[in-house]
Image (cartoon, rainbow over all chains, first blue to last red; front, side, top):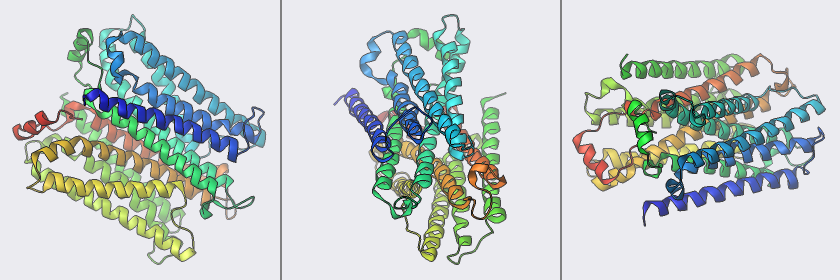
Length: 244
Length: 244
């Protein structure tokens, strides 16, 4: 089997895990937490996990690895830069909507904003992501951006990209922990520490989210799965040797 | 400034952040949570965050980057393999003690084990770490391990190493979230959502732990900070091209 077969097996695994995460988090909100609304109620909160997992983890993770798909290598890199940037802005928009959902819910129930470690991590993640997207646009899509700026930015862009993914995963796992501890209190049903069905289901969702993230890191860690450099890009790389 | 100056600046930052994390988590347990004991009481639990942060994050993170210190490059790699493996076994031992602390505490208070997502993530992290250490010993320190095994194992070892660090960070942040939600309930003082002093202090510890982890990833992401390969190692690399 050629290396691209191994890539596609890993990539299909990544796609399936991503879809499964979106499916399970939607099922959690709709089946266990009462469904969705956009009216400042607890049902508006239910959009928060769905939008954050879909945007900040699944769509983000898929957008990160888009350059590694071998069939794209014969096509213009500029086209795939636009796909990468496009998927990322959708991911950022979903995350922003996810934040609106939780802030509206807090306002409706007079719950303070930004008190928990989860919220601190989550806000840092979205701000870093927005900063990364703007910097990427300025550096890699504006035609007038100077060559030295692109070559300096590339390793920074790659590192921030991985950092945002690590922060997203951490925010998700701490968010799930927080939500389960605040809702499965024993006041209206079985407490979290008796491991009711919902807890088993959502703990498994947390594990799946981590597995998805680690599969994305597998794809990123294989040098031979990188898109081959064109001559023009090689000139930049001579100026700056870090290719990660 | 040469590249090693940049390395040492980042490395000193990594050391300082690591020390600060150990200091702050010890301060949390001793000043806010009543100190330490090894008697099945809540004071035994207090060893858990200290041992996990010290072992699974700070010592682990430092052991990961030990090959990157330029002054070690003139010395035999075998010596530094022993240092790496030695630091890792201490980190694993501290993590194991940290698990004992929480299991003993649970037994004393009849709290179920392994119900939370944090505990699922934490157990996976320690099991994966123990597996990684054993595989590393068999592959890189046993003199009779075959060359093909070492070269195949190297990229897997590097990937699992990063995965364990990501899982450790996630386990720490979800663990801090869990502990603060379970203790700052408002029954004996201010609740977590009023952001009392302890919450601000421990949220900041969580942020510092993440910053430490991301600085370790900065060190790992710079190809030019890798230990140069010897001829013997290059032979292995020709057999297996992934150098991450």
